[in-house]
Length: 225
Image (cartoon, rainbow, N blue to C red):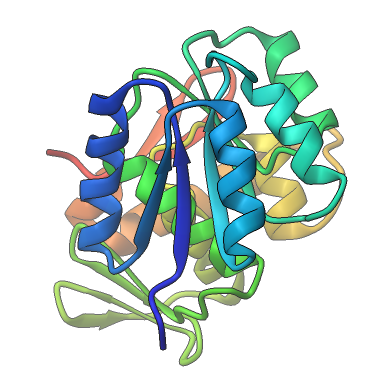
């Protein structure tokens, strides 16, 4: 299969190179644009770009304008990068059809994980096995191994771990976890999640520490080191 094309749009050459290097190692072909106008031109020239990583603050045409223009013709996944983590910016991004929102500075590894997760969701990448810090999740076989040793998980424990690994490095509220793993709206009963997290941590042994508690909010899966 040909390498998937990702368009990286940022007016900062150092940032483009950093992201390009990490994505290239993962087998992606990275195209670059240094301003919004160039990004739009490149997108319509190529026609087969799988995902766009788009900086907000850029000359000639900012990220919002680029997103608006592309959304008139395409539902290609878009990740927005911004130096400002203001809520109204994030809401504007989602209204425009942005798939993910990442604030600078960010970990390139986390960005790559988000790219892969979005492409899996959009069925562009059909990776059935995910690995993080010695934990291997095989979704097709519905099996989890820790350092090569299989562990027994209930259906919901498996789904919860799968969701954590797919969203590693991202703070997840209990509401978001309930909606995505249990598929129902949040009515204030956090005990369901907390109980499953406790059991999951126990079964993962020392690697249970990867599931961090964010007090008053929820959890974050993060591999130490």
